[in-house]
Image 1 (spheres, helix red, strand yellow):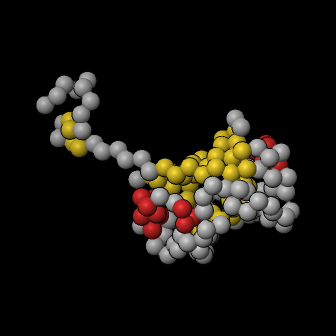
Image 2 (tube, one colour):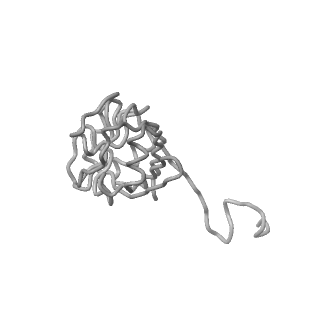
Length: 157
């Protein structure tokens, strides 16, 4: 058996395997972002949004739900939990949500996180602990100025 200070997958009869599944989505802010929606957070590939799009926190996204990596899709379709980390400038906000076997993951335009259990083709996760209204106002203000947004989605085991 290797010395405890040496890296090993096996130590003391336990097998340690760490697998990180992370998807990164890049998008841009827009002057019409308000972040007021009470039940959803959305990122879209659209280039423009109206002031009524109060769930949208990013436009010109480089991915939609259909583009997610197969490993993350499997995790979500098994009902797995995810952690979502939103980065804008030096600001950081995170929340958790769950997948579901009912997810379609087929939209080629949007990604939607939902507090409810409602599912449509745009839904990436349900039972989210946050909605657009929970995103810090300082982050929304940066997004209204057109700042870049990075969204990291990590599978939790």
